[in-house]
Length: 421
Image 1: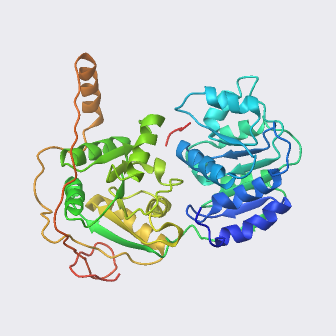
Image 2: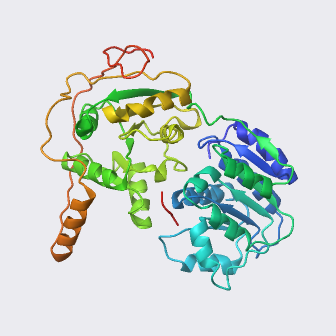
Image 3: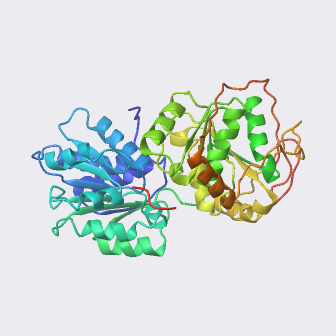
């Protein structure tokens, strides 16, 4: 798996985890925390009798559940420990079989797990290890009531509990007090700040010119493979359409896509069939894409914490990467919070030769009322699609410069929702 030495969070978490201590970990994605809780679990299950589910790992999203289960498979390749992932958007039959077989480790999203609990086969009263991963994200997505309902289905005996969260808001602190018994506190990476290997830049740009700026950067080979984060599902879809129309292979991933579509989009992006993944924050945490060159914040996130998790998709495990943020005039209000969170000013850049004031032939974002009218009309008629190959061009670096305060633009390198089952 490429391990040469444990990460800081693994060094602190694995020994007390093997001893059976409860753990409260403040650690961000990319820190190695998945192995930090999987290794103690698997060590303790190594000689256990098969046929009973002993460990339950709760995660906020399908993608994170699948990723954890994949890492569990790799770590347990030479053991008899079995596991399965439980999430929505896919057939329940293999999941029912996992319950009936009593696989040792289940990785689940709360919503789909509660669906299974409506049936007699779903019994988890043998659980003696519980993991809540990305607890703050589950809070953001409204899963705390679901988590409490899940807990009622577990056995009442003593169990070891791991709680990992990138931040510690009051509801998560309260939950940790309810669930953890004299926990070992792991606090390796602060939620503020970004990985040292990430080169960050803001690109001030009129909102209507954001798609054209991204296309220009791609066609000049200023950026390689990129996840482009959008504010809404509609904007991710529209960006995907714009990129395909420009001949740039892309895929979209957001809450309106089925699990099969999301899986195929990620697989195609990982193997290079797609150059751009237009996404909402559903993949901002928990998706591990090796050798990701760039992250583009097509829209500035409202929360500085979301910015940190978005750009954290690049420069993982000590690698380097670049994170570009397109800042429209009405998004400047969020810039100061982001710079405060990362602990320094972020340089402004402009792209030499790009026409920032050109008019657009069509609107990028279509009002909701108009979309509804179109959808009703399409139900009576038909739809269309698009495709294409990658655009090309010579490499033309442009580094903005100048001071690191708000709103500056310059020319050389300078200073500074919803329920997902």
